[in-house]
Length: 401
Image (cartoon, rainbow, N blue to C red; front, side, top):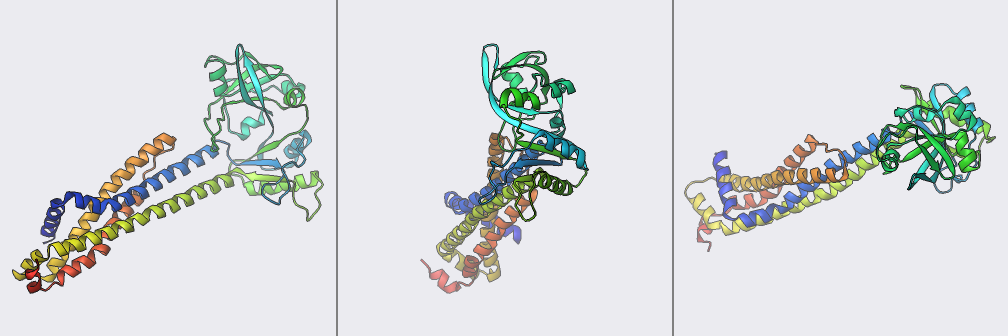
């Protein structure tokens, strides 16, 4: 009986192909939009999380000043080498403490010149960032203490300045400083903030301060906690140490901030997930619009086929059979729209994720939910027209012109 109802429903749909397509267009758009939004959102969340993970594991970033309106300004007193030494000697549960002083400078090699981010630091920077060398070596202790102009370059620098050739042993000019390339960093690609992490040059912190910056200030300190360690405890220890060193009395606000990169990653992933949910909810509204379209066209169909319904009732069809016929027709319309929308949504998601270079993550639960919801729309919005058809008086229906 069900198969017969499905066959009749498909035949009725096939008689008016254009009208049937326009009827389910809302369902198609709604399902496609929901699936595309959720798939793209999950891919974006995964990429943001992966990119932030490239910054290093169990990583804390210590910065002068506080962020946000009404907080201590970002022009607060910078850090110095003695702060680094104090952290290394007094903090427990850490793997590395790396100073960071950064400046953009013109780098010249041969006839080529580029503006590149120069970072003054030491070998602990490689530990905090989980960064390996593909060529060359780290800084010697004598280079770090004596201020020799040695540098470690990123993969983008090698590609654009040296044409991808061997970089170690070459001499480049960083602003007015002649610098020997002693190592090449492993390629990391773009960060979660869209910056090319490989377009950078590392120099010994003392060399940077004396010959480029002209000051002993350190703009940021990166602290790597031990693997499996509790970053919250390390964060609190850093805050207590810096409050003491910066003579901040009880009750006064810190003039520095300690950020846990894992918390930042979780916050960004949560924000992306929330935005994805909101966009998917907005897209789901079109499913309701599509359901109203199905109900409208089914009511028109009942009016057009009143005489057919009267004949079916007159020759012995029960009201339940008439109701099921029109209900199945509405459900079939919704299911066809749902299947088409799923295919369209996955196709759009595949194109967009490829263009944005984010992973394509298929969420089977979302696909099944969208399909089930489209069928439910057919049941909910198809019941009223089907019930109206089943309640027609056979005599009145046969008289209908």
